[in-house]
Length: 281
Image (cartoon, rainbow, N blue to C red; front, side, top):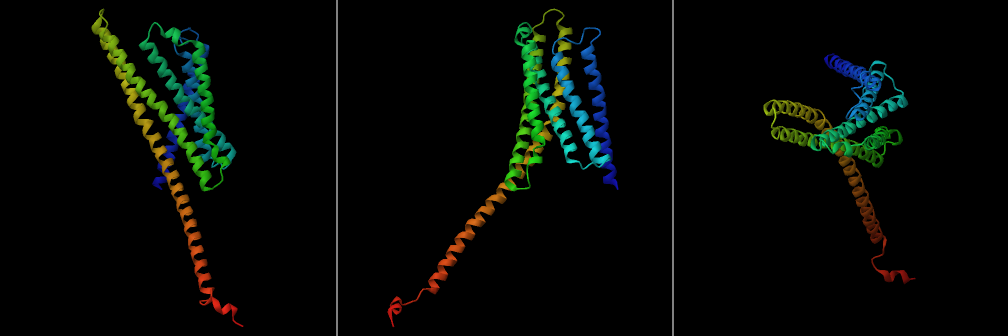
C-alpha cells in the first residue's frame, strides 16, 4: 500500500525532473546554436554546449528507462541496455565536462591575460573529444553485464568494472571541489588587491565566492555520498565473492588432503602385519 505509493511518487518525481532537464537543455542548446544576439558564443561556450548535450542525453535516457521499467513494465533486455548505456554515457560525460568547465574557470581567474593562449579552441575541442570517448567507454561498462554469466569470478570482474566507473566519477567530483576552493581563493585575492572602488568590488567578489561555496556544498552533498556508497557496495560484493572462492579453494584442498590420508589408512589396514607369511606355502 504505502510503500507502493511512495515508490510511484518517487518515480514520478524523478521523471518530472528528467523532463524539465530535457526541456531546459534543449532550449539552451538551441539558444547557443542560434545565438541571435551574438552574446552566447563567448568564453567557455563550447564546453557549456557539450555539457548541455550530455545532460540532455542523461535526462532523456533516464526518463525512458524509468518509464519503460515501471509504467510499461518492459522486459526487453536489449532496449533497457541501450538506455542504461546512454544514461551512463550522458551522466559520466556531464561530470567530466563539468570538471573541464571548472578547470577553464580556474585558469581564467588565475591567469586573466594568458588564459586566451592557454585555453585555445583546438585544445578545448580536443579535450571534449577525449571526454566523449571516455564517456563512451564508461557507457559500455554499464552494460557489461550482458556478456557475463552468473559465475563468481566473472561477476567479480563485473563488479571491478563498476568500481572503476565510480572511481572515475569520484575523481571528477574531487577535482571540481578542489578547483572551486582555489577559484574562491583567487577571487578573494583579486578583490583585496583592487584599489579603485575597493568596497564595491570586494562585496561583488564575496557574493561570487558565496555562490561558488554553495555550488561546492551541493556537489559534495549530492554526488560524493552516492558515489562512495556505491563503491563500498561493489567492494563489499567483490570481497564477499573472493571470500566464498577462497573458502571453496581451502575446502577443496582440505578434502584432497583428507582423502589422501584416508586412502593411506586403508592401505595400512590392508597390508599384512607379518610380511614373511607371503613366502609360506
